Length: 286
Image (cartoon, rainbow, N blue to C red; front, top):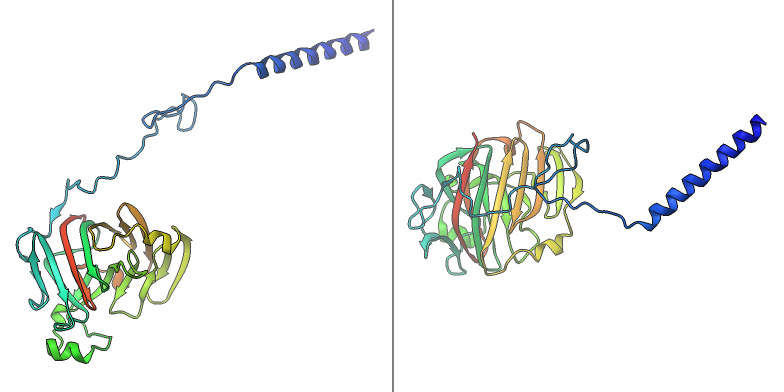
């Protein structure tokens, strides 16, 4: 008798469970949509702490930034006047077949920085290249051969106008825009566009991940038009962003690397081209 009562109770429990499940299946599911300012319900992830989205991208946010270019003169900047001038509110570097510059730099002498965020706008007319030097030095021996036509035009190399150190590359007609380049060192290209690379100075480098296809990322770069460029340097970590898109990330764990030393900013011109740079803003952390 006891066994029969247990079997009846079990059968009743199964029937009740099945009826509840059937009723639940007939009821429409309720969804909860959280706005960016809302977090999960109390007791969820974070114990009720709100989750929030960062503020939208604002390239023109200059709070805590200082300008490196006054828009009308080359005050604070130092370079060969054969190639550098101010034109229509922008710094202009120009190299022509009649006035070839080779690798040539305009150096900003008034700031020495290590950790910072830098914003600037840049445009190239022509097929040549440019880039923004940072954490860079002048006066060091130049490793690359200098073309004879450049020597004939410029004369002996003035090492005070030649820069060594990290560069946020900008070369719209080729695959280099956005990459992390070490100018005038054996390291050269450390993180190509679309790459996240971890390295130790000149000793090693390893691809840790990808940001996107190198060619597809190139479509974000504007030819013959203004591009918004952001460089973030924190310790041994370097981030290059063009027009709001992450292009390359480099981590150099060698404290003695030239990439990890405080230095100056500068603009490069390379090959036959005309480069324009404006709205240069720096938020220096040390």
